[in-house]
Image (cartoon, rainbow, N blue to C red; front, side, top):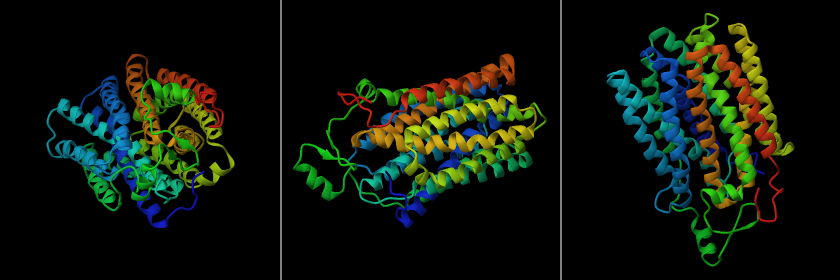
Length: 417
């Protein structure tokens, strides 16, 4: 189990990174629908554009993670800084040169892909230091991410309502620049191992994992990984369904609010409520994980998503939509850190970054499905129909997670999980 205390200095730096990343994530994925709708796109059009951005991210995430796992030339920090720079260019163009709505859509798709690709790498920073004998409090850091997301959502909702949608690309560009500054504060070595570890492993045909298990250096990918971690991929299928619902609600929350006379300020407030509810769970998660196994926590989160889907489906006012967001504490707030712990527990050491990437890819694919079909359903049948489909997605996701989330010790004779 992870160290619950960790190095104070590293925890502060990592908290700053998580906070910056989730503010960036919120400015892109929460408010992009508001921006595109203001440019004349339909809900279905917004869904298609976001789906393309998510597809790009989902395709690139495992590949980038595999490079990060094996690279001895570039540090994780260098890779993340280069990817961030690739996002600054289109974000700055979007802020400085309004252009046509199609140009804006294309630039936003690039930014979406950049932000998606960064997510498993941000999580992998924790694993990088753990593998070198250093640790940080992941719960406090991820809780800071939720706090940043809450503050960003509330402030952005107010500014968009007061000054218009053009503040969105300005905020994205600013947060990409600050992420470069935060990343520059970390010190990382080249190669996957420290010098002492490399010297030791050069004399041995295998590595000793942080849990004391002998593991092969053979790198798995594709179908080999699926066969090796069968139950884990069932959990990933569940995550896809859960985040299809999650993104239907988050992306089209402005339309949900619009049914009851709400605006972008109400949307920002509602998202901020959800994010604030995450913070106690995230901060205390290390303690929670000491008492409850990660696979059980994933099952609790699956049930939490279904309860939240039902609550939003039944809501009849802006106030009740706000109230349904309280269930974020039993759903998203548990699933995100539990999935990180669970992946760390079931994946062998040489597969850990890929494990994080697969989780992020599943979240991204779920977002793609939710964005694409959510918009199409709204255009064809309205918001209530979309929320009904959202309940069905949450139910299917819970079922897959409950079947797949087994303890790491439940491996077959062939090692498959």
